[in-house]
Image 1 (tube, rainbow, N blue to C red):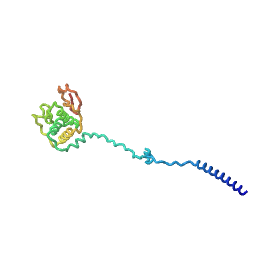
Image 2 (cartoon, one colour):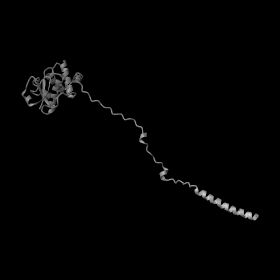
Image 3 (cartoon, rainbow, N blue to C red):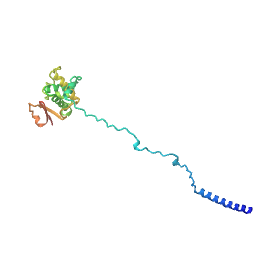
Length: 211
């Protein structure tokens, strides 16, 4: 009986061992295998990513300052500023002399217009190329006698203004007539040549013409 029990227990033990082994195999097969990561070249170095534009802070752009257009200075102020300017050279003195004798009683605009006619003639190619040559040209300005100028009262206000006008005209600080105006005459005379020219403007007692 003891032998039978032992045999029985032995058989049961063998069966039990086989059942435990089978259960262990089932448990092992249900555990998922953990994959082993293999490093690659792409994963070795992280890729740089750009920042979104919303994260970039910039200062607001300031509009460029608008430069104000230069304001034309009144002729009276220019004359006042130029009345005590540097001494005139020979050419500018001839110009001031023409202004003095031709338009002493005229407005500043009228005096400047006379100065511009002299300058326009010197640049036109139709008259002498120098200011003194234009002013002293025979039979052009009635105050000239045999190529000589009358005496000027150098201490008077009219001469200071004439010099200032000459400085303004030669430096082109202001203009009152176009560059093609080469002729003028007093409004109390009617020269025949005036009918062959185009009238441009009347300033004070002088009428100005172009061809």
